[in-house]
Each structure stands twice: as C-alpha cells, then as structure tokens.
Image (cartoon, rainbow, N blue to C red):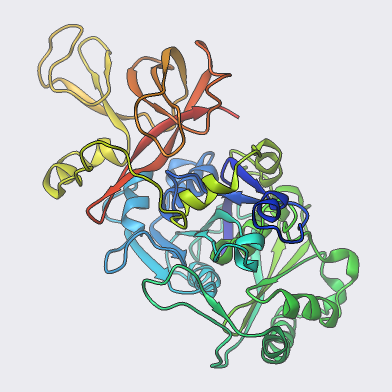
Length: 470
C-alpha cells in the first residue's frame, strides 16, 4: 500500500488556446494544452511515463505486475499493457493487464496497485480530444503518469508514501459517455452534473478522512479533479480544507488529461512535497473516489528522471490548429501519393520483439562491438553466435550526421533522419522526433523514445525514435 517511485510524462507539443479561438472565430481562452504528437498515443506515452518513474529504481525492486489505465486505448479486444511491458523490457513472468473504459479506471488501477500482493506498476495515460470548438478540445490535454507500489511485507523498501485512508461513492447516472467508434464524448448539462457529483464527492472524501483518522484541516495538499469542471469547483469549496492546500489543477498549462490527470497532479506534488505531509486525491468520475497518502522520510530517495515542472517548462508552443486537427483525425487531408503502408506482420514482429519493442541490441563477447539491430555475426571481428543482448533504449547518443528530408512523407514535415552513436558503442540510423529541423546539428545529444511510427490496416507499428535530450 506504499508508493516506491513515481513519474509523469507530458508531450513536447503545446497548443495555445488562443490559436483555436482565432481559427474558429470564438472568444479566446487563456493558457495552453499539451498535445500528443502524430506519433504518440496512450500506449507510447504510458511507456515514457513508466521509464521516467523507473529510471532510478534498483533492479531488485522491478515490478511484478503491470496495470494500464486509459480511456483512449490503441486497441480494443487486445491488451495494450503488453506493448508497455515489452517496451520496458520486463520479465515475461510478469502479468500485464488493461484497466480501461473511463476516467475512473485510473483511480481503480491505483486502488488495485495499492492493495496488490505483489510489487505493481500502475500506468495511467490518456489522449483527450473533443469536437472542434468544444470544451473538451479546449480544456483537454494529453499525458501519462506511472506509480510503482510496494508489496506487503517489504518493510526494508524505501517507500515514499503510505496510504492512510480511502473512500468511494458510486451511483449510476448519465453525465458523460461515448459509444464505440465515436470520435468525441457526449456531455449532459452542467447543473445536472453538479447535482449528481457533489454529494458523492463529499461522502467519499469524508469516508477517506475518517479512515485516515484526520480532519480535512490537517491535510497539506489536496487534489480535486474530475470530468465535470463545475462540480470540481463546488466540491473544492465544500470539503472543508484550508484554501491554501488546494493544488494547481495544471489547467492553464497542460489541460485536463483524463484517466492520467489526478496521477500527474499527484506526481507533481510528490516532486516537491516534504516528509510527513498528507496528500488527498479526490476524483469525480462516474461517482467519486478519494485516497489519502502520507509522505515518509524516504521521500525523494528514488527520484523520477524528470519532474512535472521541468516538462512543463520545456514544452514547445507554436503548433497550428490545422496541424492539431490533422493529428487528431478531425481534418481529412490529401494522403501522400505513394503506395499504401503495409501492416507489420505478426510472426516477424514476435521473432524480433526484443528489438522492435525493447530496443535490445547485441554485444560481441569476442571484441565488445555493439550491433543495432542485433546480429549473429560480428561486423568487426567476424565472430559467429558469440553475442549477448544489451538494452539500448535508456542509453544516450550523439548525432554523427543527419539529413533534413523534405520529400519523404511525414505528418510533421520535414522528416529529420540521423546517424546516432551511442555512449559506450553502437550506431543506429533512424528518425528524430520532437526536433526543430532548423536547430538540429552534429554533436547534439539524443535520447530514445517509444513511438507509434504508423498505423496500417488496423495495426499499430510501434518502434523507437530519437529526440533531443532536455
């Protein structure tokens, strides 16, 4: 019932809300929203959040189970968590499961992780988009969060938080819904949502405080979030906490990230909290859920690779509304005048799972030469079948040479391809993403990122690209 490590991922791209207003001729709203790039989805962002969370976790504390929560799964009738499992290079004996369908699924995964009998990695990720000009488009955001929960009995593990109490309230009512295949959700009017949510939230929060043995005034940080902004505002004032303890909702910079949002907000607080502080998370979505954590003296022992604040600061604006609509599939543009893409076949994908999903290369035991992709025959000394596997996804690289290709098709032209020399050996030729073509240069430092390269014939082709180190 304790959090060992945490981390969040925010996409590099930002869309200024004033840009939406200018394009549609509507009143402008302040701030920006985070935008998953054309080559990102809930699965790829979940991988990145987990990598950030696990970057400094010792090998002996590796997850023993993986849960993935989202409202925007890449696949239906197929487990998406298995791709995250493969990209992280987890042990095949570890189970990976989806907890999908609604924003509340994110809190459900946290509850399951907190009560799991084994060390559990909870990944929460979402791509949130509504119809053009709507509130979901304007106020939504994309992102992911990940939490590693310790197993019972691991008293020697430096847990950063412990769960003091929890509460829940459930009622069947129609406030937000989306049928399979629909692009955007339907939302009932605001007064009804407030009427339904407020008593549920008050009940769940009161039960959590009672279970924790504290009063609302004793909380140090309070996160109130949910699918209904008006109800969230009302509840925030009604739960009896000190106003200064209510945390920033990140609405001005990131937007509402659905199943990931309360996780990103919690991760942001853990980035800067102090030991001995009490943190409440209250979610309004198809009912209400509350969790109360207390930070321990081990807070900060295992730090994420990047904080939420650092990622907010490093985001890039300037995204056009037309590009945003294209990436979201809301603007059907002329396709490239080239043969249609062919879906990756299942058998070769299975045979090369370690390379395709885990970016695992090979190292020659005879001379130490590294090969990307992995090889049986060493290109340097000619040794045959004297290779050991080596994961390269977390190794930084340097641009040896590059080209800016204005003829090759990409949803974010121009395409930037580079030859990367990895620290400690190994060379790879591949595509760069989240990069400014005018600023890239030889010698730039690059890290690998898991992306959805393309989708063809209903199959997502996941692989790795390089991006500038931030």
